[in-house]
Amino acid sequence: MTSLSSPTSATHAFEHVRFIMVQPSHPGNVGAAARAIKTMGFKELWLVAPKYPDIHQHEDAIALASGATDVLSQVHIVPSFEAALASVSLSFALTARPRHLGPPALDIRESAQLAAHHAYNQAHSVAIVLGTERTGLSNQQLELCQYTCHIPANPEYSSLNVAQALQLAAWELRYALLESNQSHTLPSTQGKADPGAMLAPMSATDAFLAHLEEALIAIEFLDPTHPKKLLTRIRQLFRRSQLSNDEVALLRGVCKAILKSARSPH
Image (cartoon, rainbow, N blue to C red; front, top):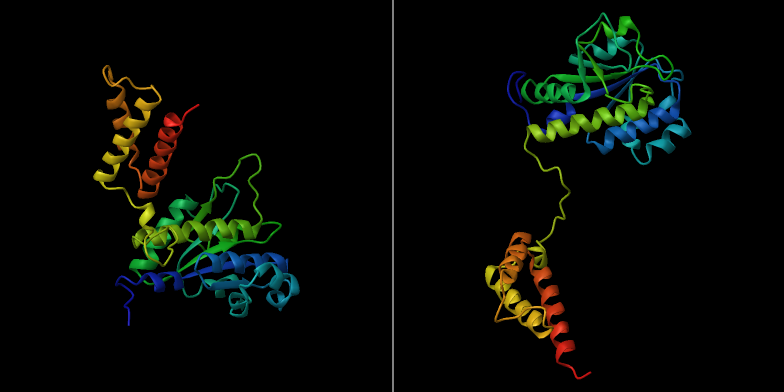
């Protein structure tokens, strides 16, 4: 069993993150939040005193979840904000408004990096907290969190829909967790490498350049007795391009067509 002070695995780090929505009133936002959580690899959605006790089972929630019904079915509903934070050791309160008093402020990327470090290296639960759709989080609720978290949106219109804000937070946190674990951020084809996409060997590139030289002479673009720097520049261009096998084959086909046209009677 992983100790509280030892590093944890990538999978467990994702399990140490919860998203808390305080007093949500729109079922659609709960469903969209579930979808956002699942697409970023997280599982835990906590609802504090929602407007409807079965808000996560509402048809709008199910529709907006778009398949993330497993997250909806495991929603934690608690009566108070304190209950949602009881087992959390580090919490970030998302807010669009600047606060003169309260926890120190970080932007969303700084928050994600700190949260990822905590989830990996401490194995404690981390919470991302979002307020109500209409008024956000109160000052009293903010004071229960360790940090306030800001998304650097357009200062003239910085109010995000709560589910959209949660999606951004989940994305930043996922990226930070993957980066901390040096995991891949690009999708895998789960198959063999495409030989055509691999870099062409030097011999293939040299053969193409000889073919190209022949084609350029055939159309009288290149004077072989006075090449000047043309061939040198052409070689530098294509070597710098790092051609793939497919690209070399394509260009050899172009050279073949040029030679055929140049040699055909008009």
